[in-house]
Image 1: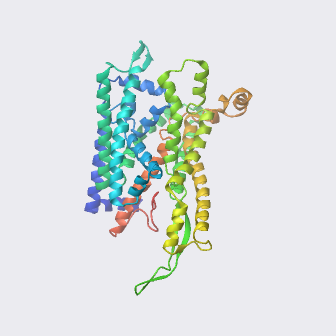
Image 2: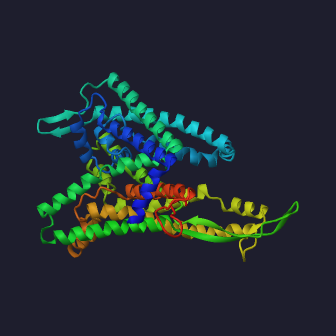
Length: 472
């Protein structure tokens, strides 16, 4: 503990690091101020009721990455989600379009050009999303004590234009804040904005848990349930830290060569392959796809019983939803790694620079060897992502195996305990995706601060070794 406090004090002893930290905290405070400025023309109380009714739809995904701003439809309601979507689209398009692939290899100039395209695409997506949201909200009514009431006070073209202008401007401003933090602050600005939006709900989760303890909601098992809940939460976070920093190091030997009068090479190095190379991208892709049916149900209000049953079967927390969620996470893990990592290109580069893996012939054999290792790591990483995403959801809503059709559901209902089927009934604020984001961003930010301290010959957070983040 003393070393941790000493490291915090060292941060403020270094003028440049202190200035960067205060700049980052100041811009995050500006971002949080936008959470209290609502978009004109919306009945926010009815909107929150709509969110409770449409849990698991695309509204919930947008609300996660906006830090709760979308639930209140503030000026930052779209959050950073359009920027994330634009970045993912451009990253995937580099495989399809040779022009973008060339830009990616041109260094700083190419990176700036891709960043510029990302900004344009972000604004375009924000305009499209805000227009869709405005039309959707004008169609929605919420049942209350006084009957069905409309969400929009004065629907029409004026409301649509005002919503597009407000939400698009808010997204552009958040994008600017993130870029300023990345350039003049500490850490990745976009990730820190998402991080700030998620952790702001932690006090509310603690308050809810305290209320359950005071009210003795779980009867005689309340104390045991709280202890188990805390142990599971700490274990999940520790498990994420362990896996996110995990690497498979492949030894690489470089042959000696003469450059002028100097002997170069001959050293042994390692090729680090992360266990979770896809990061949080696979769960985001999977959850985004699975919200489409629920969003369609929310938009078109299906009337037939058969259609309602289909939508209900793939709604959040149902067994079919869970099965599809796990399958898509693992599938997208392989898909994303296959796009960003090319073993053949890696083997060619190693051969050009005189490098080889001991015991493996250069060229095709090296490529196949790296592909086998990467396939195993990606499968382990996909299973890990699925577990991390499912544990919080089980704590919230359970597995719901008793909702299966026919005798299978009846058998689960009779033989399985309710705490497995219905969950623990807790309002666990961190879902699987948000938990991965929070832990990963915290690891990366602390690792960057640690590197700054060590570079200036100050004591960091660890005594021995090196604090490693997801990119360390």
